[in-house]
Image (cartoon, rainbow, N blue to C red):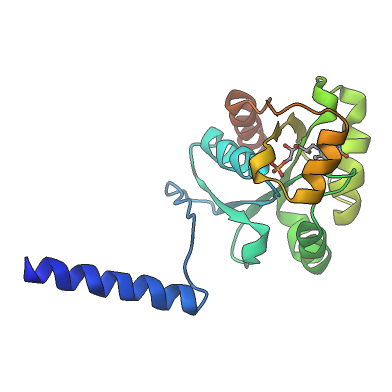
Length: 198
Ligand SMILES: Cc1cc2nc3c(=O)[nH]c(=O)nc-3n(C[C@H](O)[C@H](O)[C@H](O)COP(=O)(O)O)c2cc1C
């Protein structure tokens, strides 16, 4: 009993120290072992792009490590990279834009897939929207060599996860909450990416 109490206090202390040093990780996705090192990096505000990223990796058999771009991951040791992000006002997050701009030369030869998560007024994404939803927000940042599999997924609106200004703006348009992200579609995209590499 005393040992248990000591262990409990010690682990609590470790957590507190970890938080104080900024090392505490809220979410880790542990990939399944693979001969090739894959990473999926995403930018999100409310989490739908994070779920898409995890499900893309699951479609690949769980072999890709999944990173929030705010972790500023070092992807130099990875062989292949998939990049994606949520769309607001036709763009991905500032953090994802800066990350791509900073690491463009390293990322480009490793790039094997691009994805966006969008609202698209709750309408199905049409093929001709690739320019608006993939090429403009992501492809243009990466420049040449981005002719890789790409997909725009419909996402979610969850008001409780949104900053106040965005919530007010969307509620002003009478936008309902919705959940249009499909795990099966994300997994299929992961399978497609993998099939093009083998
Ligand atoms: C403030 C705001 C602006 C948005 N702008 C767009 C947009 O320009 N085009 C679009 O298709 N969807 C837009 N959306 C919908 C988001 O792309 C959608 O909710 C997505 O699932 C958000 O992803 P996240 O949960 O990863 O942040 C917008 C959503 C918000 C809250």
